[in-house]
Image 1 (cartoon, rainbow, N blue to C red):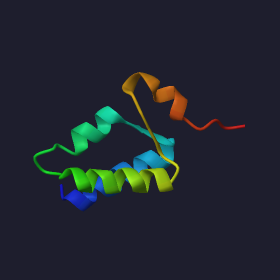
Image 2 (tube, rainbow, N blue to C red):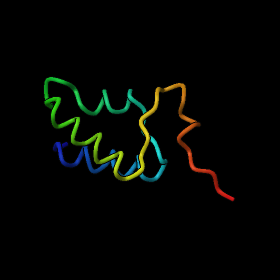
Image 3 (tube, rainbow, N blue to C red):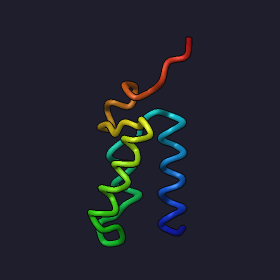
Image 4 (cartoon, helix red, strand yellow):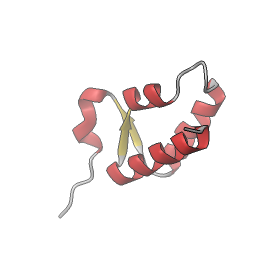
Length: 67
């Protein structure tokens, strides 16, 4: 999977759920393939889109409520 495909998939998932976990980001952005500045730009994009990044145990906090 190409870098852009990975970022697009994560962005779509994050927007849908309203959050991503740090573990999901770590799995998708291994340091040896994604430079830190690239990850920081992606984190800024997530923030701009209203997507929170949470610890794995905090998954429920990022979910949007319906009703």
